[in-house]
Amino acid sequence: MENTLPNLEKIEENYKVPNLEKGIAVLEYLSLHPLGETLQEIKTTLDISQTTAYRILNTLVRLDYLLYNEDSKRYRLSRKLLTLGFRSLNEHNLLETVLPRLRDLRDIVKETVCFGVLGSKKGIFIEQAQGHHTFRFVLSPGKPFELHCSAPGKAIMAYLPNTVRERYLSYMEFPRFNARTITCKEAYLEELEKVRYYGYALDNEEELSGVICVGAPVFNYTGYPCGAIWISGPKDRLTKDVIKLSAKQIMEITIMVSAELGYSKTQKIQAIYHDYT
Image (cartoon, rainbow, N blue to C red; front, side, top):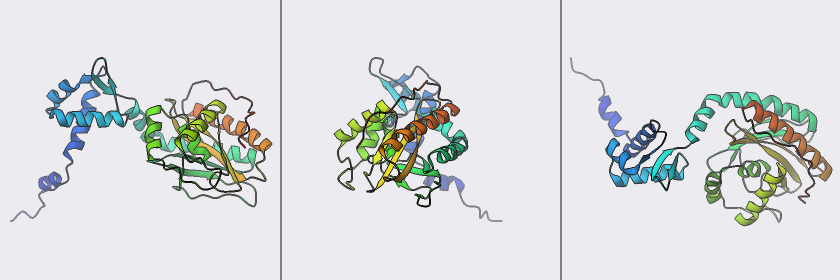
């Protein structure tokens, strides 16, 4: 009887991405060498041309999967893969940890409380606890948010490692929504310094006139800002005094969530005197 089964070997061959396979081989090889290896050692062991190996290694360094030591000329794995693995195993636990705290904070501040994370180029809204007021803000899960004018975007960007922050900055076009919008990198970096100093971020009608958002970062067990919690409300309800009090309450919640995610660094809730307006 004639064999009518498809040639699986040929099909698999058509869908291979050789350089991707070589990149994964590099990662797997370096996982066995915690002190790192040189370009020559890697290309020889894996039988990769020097040009291809150099391009793969530099791409992985640029994307923060590898670290390069100028003195020893060695490449080694960064902690990013560990962080990715942790996220994949605990994504559901992250939401399980955050959701009750969103409701707790909502019951305290009465406004809509949201949680979001970084996407490939912008932030991504994940979940919310709707406020108690008749007029309140409602978002759809998966909705992107700008990093330069949103409270969660600023809150996360302020605490990213420099290399990661620079990569996101390279994607940002700083669109202007109104006269309050930050429209250049220099002013944005100054704003991030304020966020790091005070521990919270503010969207002071920078995207939507009449709407104010206050947010703070959530850290995972490695100290990486894995998301942000923020509140949104009309400016007639979020007065200066309410913003100061709400910022303190948000920071208390984000520290609790971070601790539950394994973040052990002691953070101090300080009185907030800065006037963002």
